[in-house]
Each structure stands twice: as structure tokens, then as C-alpha cells.
Image (tube, rainbow, N blue to C red; front, side, top):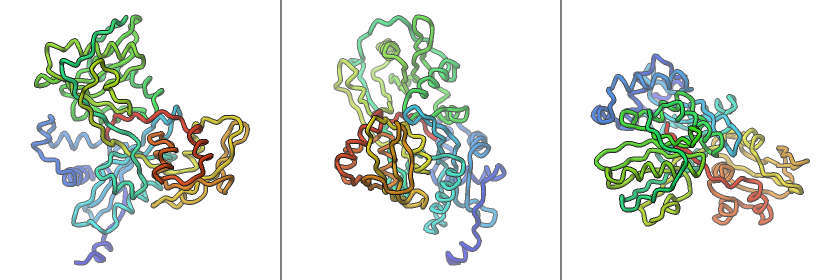
Length: 405
């Protein structure tokens, strides 16, 4: 039977709780998750299906059905992120997959376009995703906005003990003080996810059996930082370390160093563009860096209207000329008029032009790449005065994002 006949049978509709088995089957097929792999991380098949129920309860899941069979799908988590101190509604795209026999019918393209339209209607002006193919998602308008750095520190390179006034206490990974510390961190740190209960559950899903938390308390017994870790085969595995003060950073590394006689090395990850090597006495460690999450501006007007521009007196008006491969409402001209320290959005040209695509606009305003660099490599076309102005208008802090969904 030809593709045209198949397309006549297909119907796009929401994926509901009664489809949880098919939702799970499609994910496992697309990502080739075997029963053995599930058991290795402590999951049974029924538990995985149970774990996906909150996704269908809370997320907006859209799929294509061939009669009653789910054959293509994606899910959008309703989330919030910190963008330079401003809370944005974010649509977290996940669960993307199509059975191979239904490939090349344009099904995922239509699902993405519909889901982005729905995000816009829900006020989610930006979307995050973990890319299984960076080129594919770039073609759909997403761009890299964060990195993951992994590092290995030999026991002979552990940092020296630094005197601190507080101490680290070991506790459960979901201790209230852990959640409080992360909440304080996320409220300050650009790019972070404002984690709700489901976000925390996703964060811990594959490692919670062995995960331990070490919380640093200052002399007033206030939590100021934590690390998640586990020890296996003489290796100290660090999932994440965050801290609100430099004292907490020293205290947490003192705790790691205290394991000197128990382990031969530390393997860890961090999600900032600052190499950890510079903070160590012996900086000759192994570090690797790789792209991590991608983002896309869903609604240019709403996104820029909320954006915390660093406006100074005498700002000159200018406008963006934006190209978007999927969304017509993001195509065209977006003027920025500066009046009494405020930014007014206009749908008309005003001042000089800044020509770029939605991918470049996203990574620039997330401060992953700076305007001057993007102009240098040809991703932004604008005169040098406007580039210098953008450098001053856009905060410099690079995003931090350590979650996975």
C-alpha cells in the first residue's frame, strides 16, 4: 500500500492515559532500550511504564495514530526557567519519536509545528530540548545554549584543604535542605530550570538508588551548597555540585578530598563554561566539553518583551530582521525603541537592521555566544555600532542547565 493511502488513515490527536503502553513502546523502540538495560539501572518494565504516567498526566503529548495505533509522538513539559533573573514559561520538548516504517511522511515536522503553536498559546515563549541530532533540530529552529563538561581528577591532584567555618553533612538526595539550596541557586543562576516535583523525579530517575547528597552548612547551620555523588570501584562519581558562596565551594571540595584514602580518582560533570581546572592547585587534569541542551525562541515578541535588557541612557533604536524555518509569526521585522530606560517592541523597521535567524537570536539572547563573535562568524549581519550596542544590552552570564528530560 502506498504512502498516500497510509496518510489518508492517519490522524493527529492528543495522547492520553489510555495510550501509556503504546507511548512507552514507541519510546523504547526508538531509543532501543532493552529489558537488560532497564534491569541494570534497577528498573523493571512495569516500573518504567508507571514512571511515565506522570508525563502523560502533566505534559502535553501529541501524536499521530494509524487507526488505533500510536505511530509518532512528542511531549511538552510545562516548565519555568530563569533567564537573567526573569522567570519564563518554557516548553520542554521530549519523547520525540516515529516508527521507521512511517518515516519521510513529514509527521514530526507537523507535530513540532503544532506543538510550538500550542506553546505560544500557553505563553511558553521558549522551548528547551536535549538533541539526539543537533543538525536536525537546528533545521527546526533550535540552537545550542549550554554545555556539559566532564572531568577526571587523580587522587594526587585533589585540592588542598581550605579552612572553613562550617561543615558538610551527608543526607538523602531529596532532603528538604537540598531542595531549598537548589531553589536559591536557581533563582540566581541564568538558564536554570525552576524544578517542580516532576522535574526532581526526572532528575533522579536513573541514579537515585546509589545517590548520596553532601550538604554544606555554614556556622549558623544554613545550607549554602550541596553535591550529589556515589562511590563505585574506587571512583568518586560527582553528579552535580552547586554552591551559593565560595566558602561552600571550599567546604564541598574539602569533603571530596577527605575521601583521599578511599578512591583513586574523581569523575564529575559541571554545566558551566568555566573550566574547573583553573580552580585547582594542580590544573593538569582531563576535561572534556560537549554541547548539551538546545533552546528555541517560540514567540519573539513575548520573549523580547520580558527580556531584562541592560539599558543605559542614550540607547539608539534598531530592528531585527528574523528568519524562522517553522513559525511565520517569528518571521520579519521586530523593532526595539528605547524610551525613558524602557524597551518598546514594534513590528516595523526603526534605526539600523540586525539580520539573523531564530537560532542565532536564541543563542545570542541566552548569552551562550556573544554578538561580536556571532557577527565575526557571519551569523549576524549588522554594522559595528549596533553590535557594540548589543554587547552592552545583553547580560554576559552564560547559561547553566544540569537537568535532563
